[in-house]
Length: 294
Image (cartoon, rainbow, N blue to C red; front, side):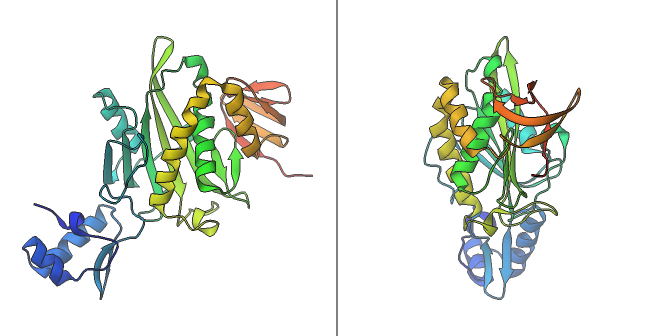
């Protein structure tokens, strides 16, 4: 039998009508709505009745236009979408499998930093890729993901490797890449994406301040753009040239915090393996700080 979440739409429905369809009392509908909200689902309640927040990517409202985003698991509250998707990948999930959550209790960004999100205001999901890449080319995948996100939303620019920054410099989105290797080849890659769509934590920025996009539109646009860009992994220079055009890092003085210390200097180029050239020093991983323009 369908549950309340299966019946909610983006239009208001009365508690009486929903109760009749479910064969329960209005009090039971109200109780179930409270439970769904506690699970993180953005169920809106007013005198007009009940609805799901417009733009929510529920499975029956989300229609990926390509092969990425299928199959799809839409969850309310989880520890981490990366952990859920990793277990699914180990069970044999196909490329394109997607896990989305409204609330992540252990959401994380690069370098293990926590990622804050809010139900209905943030878009947090993980996507499975099986790119068949050699390990030496894995560093290109974060650049590709950041580029796909930038081109999908049409706002801001990229801080190496894949943070999407707003025109005012606030962080709009980030991508976490985790991968499993077999020998010298990537067995699978997990792209964990977090986008501040209608809300942002203090010091960050949110997308709807610059573009009238819903969470569902951002998700569908990203998946379609990423699928279109994936062939560029076979022609790295074409990918890098496109990435350079979207970069806010190149040509700037930066400070990069790496596992081996701090590198400071002019961000000169992105190298064929995806690493950043800073003052003649190759940086393969680290947190970039854009220093003030003189």
